[in-house]
Length: 149
Image (tube, rainbow, N blue to C red; front, top):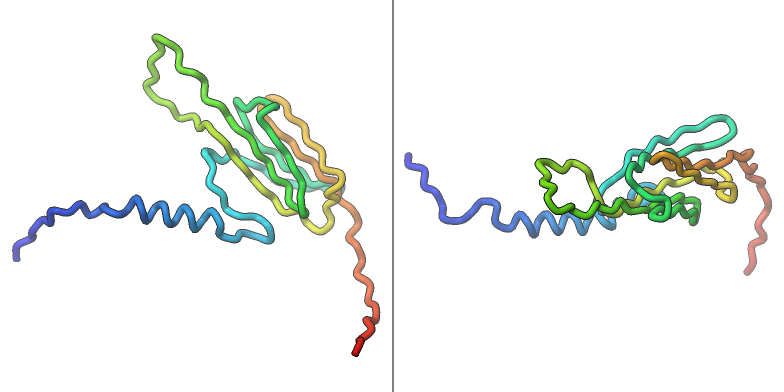
């Protein structure tokens, strides 16, 4: 049996497949209100809770405070920002660059007992700390609903 090499590159078309998957993932539902999004980099985040509050901590070394944005909308906390690449200096030659640069976005759906009106944020030494107070869960009350004809 003789193996013959085809004249065509086996990876031809892979780029368009990759683009199709990227486009699909950009709108794929994830959780209640979250969506996977494409970003230049993704910062590490730790989410914790105490009896009094929830806390989201994002590691953002090299990000300036003016390049950060924290928003709360429809019970979703969204962290956005950008880490800007330093301008290349004349005479400086890089042998390896492992740092990631560009924009990012992370979203977190708040639990039912989180008070979205008390969200605060603090940024110091490359650590963004977002705090959300906990509230007593709202009790669901049964009531009769009138049926109209």
